[in-house]
Amino acid sequence: MATVHPATRSDVPELARVLGRAFDDDPVMQWMWPDPLDRRRGLPRMFAAFTRHHHLAHGGVEVAAADGRAVGAALWDPPDRWRQSRWTQLVMAPSILRAFGRRAGVAAAVGATMEAAHPDGPHWYLGTIGTDPTARGGGHGQALMRSRLDRCDLDRAPAYLESSKESNVPYYQRFGFEVTREIVIPDGGPTLWAMWREPR
Image (cartoon, rainbow, N blue to C red; front, side):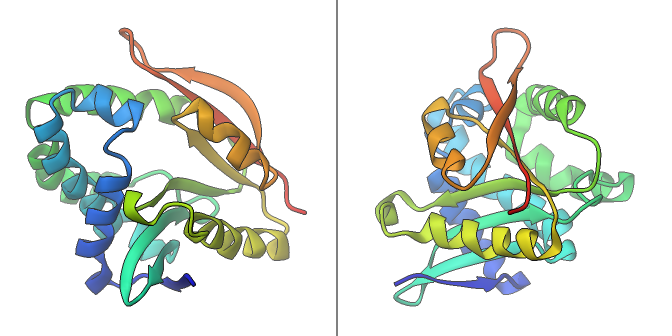
């Protein structure tokens, strides 16, 4: 049985490793890190940097735990807080450069494309959600989704995400998200599906 709790700084290393394993087969991550070894080193570093320097301060990071260990995580940003400040970008830059190495320019282009397509208006933004491959099918992702979406409904707030796999679109639709557009990464990159959810 999964339990969901707000993350603290002490959760970040394990959370980053879980998300790194969860996103190893993700098309966007594979585009940014074509080399599997680079990707397995870089993903936890990227998720740790984003969580520690951006998401955690806004109170939108949650961890799903089972048998005393983290098995999933969700990185949400509250309304009007999804965009990284210049200060956050500066503080995070050394960690991001270590994570991406010579692929930092590709990662920046992906981020700029997603940012340009991001909708206006107040909403909760689900930047990342993932479950450890060894724990999939246990309802952990559902518990993470419901935890924050229940708050969205209580606050009458919309929610937004990008699905990087077309096969995951029906999963998000079950929670009330609907596809609003396709976002194509330039230079032959993969497609993401922008999805919006009105509160229930």
